[in-house]
Amino acid sequence: MKNINLTDHFLIAMPNMADPFFAKTLTYICEHNEDGAVGLVINRPTEFTLDKLFEQLGIPFADSLPAGRSVMFGGPVQIDSGFVLHQPVGKWKSTLAVNQTVGLTSSVDILEAIASCEGPEQMLVALGYSGWAPGQIEQELIQNAWLTVPASSGIIFGMSFEEKLSAAARLLGINFSNLSNEIGHA
Image (cartoon, rainbow, N blue to C red; front, side, top):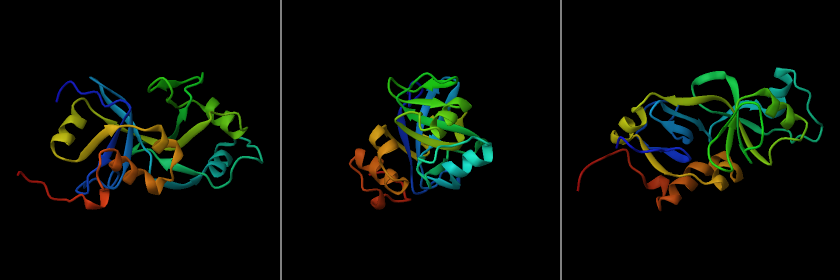
């Protein structure tokens, strides 16, 4: 399992996931290489909404900005920092191109563009990110902590947070509610 690359894949938390940060989560892996992995939980909202986040950061925002849009909990690393998963990749100051159409940006210029309704067409804003040391995801896969599947931008950007986990499981032909905590051998 050494040579896998889960960039642009979903990690679906198995029902036996004991870590409270990741129980019942769908995580999008933005980068996975020999140095480890970085991703965002995409189905766990925080108490923050975009407009409240902009107010707290002192970023003026347009009246036409949709009120009440949730900011996600991206993971337990740097929870005081914002990350924007977006489509298209665009030209922001600090962007990691996940693939040809999806980017992850951590610079304030994208937040200012979103606040003035000039941001990317599709986006998900998160506080914090998820990080893994080299070989850690591979070990967690061996321990049956995650299922993996190539990601779908329709799930990332086009569904409510409540629908995402089940939709990702369906990409594997699995009904998430039928998954068990038990593992075994046939």
